[in-house]
Image (cartoon, rainbow, N blue to C red; front, top):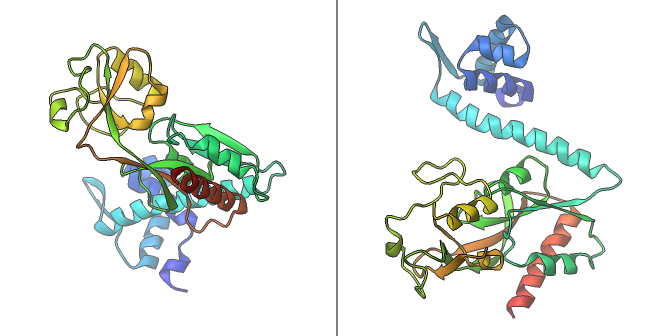
Length: 283
């Protein structure tokens, strides 16, 4: 048996704990085991792989280049195992549902028509809709809590998904109606130079961090920030806000996404309903 096949998910779990803590004692405590067997397990893993994963010296523990790669890929592997377990458990329930995830307004106005077409398909299952925070859709798909989701190119990470592009939306600047630019018929990105822009989770910058659409709209109404968003935001625009086209801003594409190599008939039916319905609406 070669080194790759000899490695099990438990080996990866132990390595990821050490790699994240960079301390064998803390990693052992986190895993609920003693430190000596954890140290032996990591040594055995290095021997099976034939590479050094960690550099241990008097200054502590640090990752080698091979260790960095295994940490990155190991996290994904563990997430994949957890997602597979969740999907299997959900698929075995007698009340099986198709879980669809999107952020508020993230369907580009398409969902109601898709659901109407989907319900007519013989492979359809009852739909459970999750409305999540900004940027959370991909995570819910990856960890097995959702079956299909509405993502947005180029903002969301599409890796690990099969996708179908549904709709391309122009960008608009959302401003308070009292803003100096609020009476313009259109804008260029240069017009927004010097304006305070929001930070999405995980981003750096000087603007306020925004976790959901309601929070963002409140901050814009208070004059604390402005935002460049897909034009579908117009349908849920609060009183006192305006949306002005930004002619040179990149458009946003609404993308339907689901896990790669998915064999679910209910997912396939939802994708059919989405693609057929979008083409019919466009024609």
